Image 1 (tube, rainbow, N blue to C red):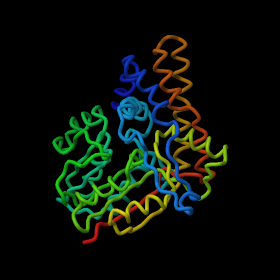
Image 2 (spheres, rainbow, N blue to C red):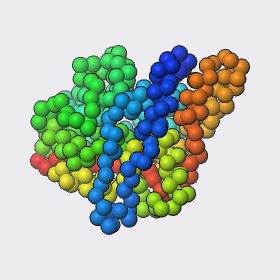
Image 3 (cartoon, rainbow, N blue to C red):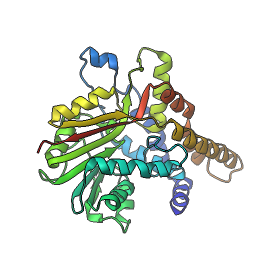
Length: 331
């Protein structure tokens, strides 16, 4: 509850500069974003990374959208797959992170790196589950500051960092690495995956869970393309690649691919969209009464725009936010 109150206060008192940078970021980050479909893969079209990489615009986006997500159930900045539809989004995150911990095969005292760690909430849980020592890098300083303030995390192990650049760790530093839904901003898959391979010990595992295009997606279908673009803006993913490109990125870096599977989140998406629809109505009403600033209402409207498209895109099996790959560095 305190996190939600803090997020609301941050939105109510947002500076004009941060507001403007956030609203502008959509026009910079989500226009002509790269896509590689099943048809591309079958025709041998090379993977095209996200050209902006880890930009200032992306930092501006995450500085604000983290506050918006914290109002809901996604302070951890990801939508998990539906594992138990009867439970909440947060409960399904916990169940999903247990699966990730099992995939990572960590033991007490091992070192594990979280790429795109946000405020460190997943890393904290991973440490609790495994006894491993958590590390994390994230582009947004405001989220790293939150990790530094968490007494359950070793603050020295968390830093501002960019997986599109050389990782500032020695070779064979980690027993495992994972990345939960930040990887669509990779500009050069070969480089980033090779860097992860370098910092892993032999036998170490690399787990990603991220957005992927599925078999049904047809870029030439205007309806499908619109649903995907709406979903991109709502869930702020960058590049959009057929899942076999993810698999090939592992193999090209030298990993043995242990598993690769997609999972739907549609039942949980419906719960979260219903919650944010209520927020949207409340914010609009309060802004009209001048109880809250108009720009706070505008932030909510921008973030929640076309949210039904997200549901439809998953129901039509055009995409998943949860393509899950496990790779292992040969011993």
